[in-house]
Length: 74
Length: 74
Image (tube, rainbow over all chains, first blue to last red; front, top):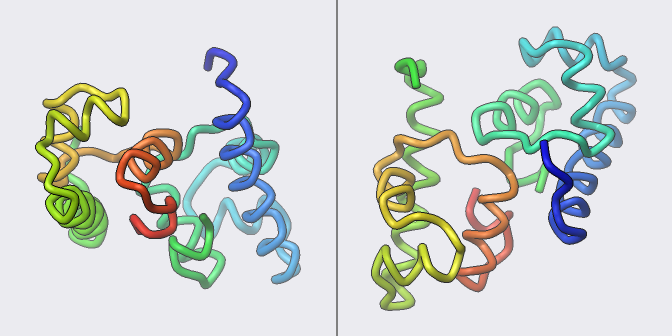
């Protein structure tokens, strides 16, 4: 993925931070969350580091796995 | 894009409907919105029809172009 402009990098990083916060609140490991969301563990790690331009369906999967709405993740 | 399960199709369709509602409220054509969001007009059309698994950065671009937050689109 080419280096996105600052505001885009901030958007990806904010999303990743939000996922990490909610995951930790639930006491889940990245692996636990990946299993719940039917995603690969390394993908969850890269999302949390703000390295992924996550698509809508995975946003919904993560939200469901974290017990929140997709809106809560943005 | 392979045919997503029902709940996923609903998520894409709900997003598209939301974009269309907000666009029409502003009296914008799909072309106007595409120009504002720096996206292709046909891509905006397919998003509104619920055919696209839109990624985070385009969600933010559409939100900015519609004068709302990304949260408002979900």
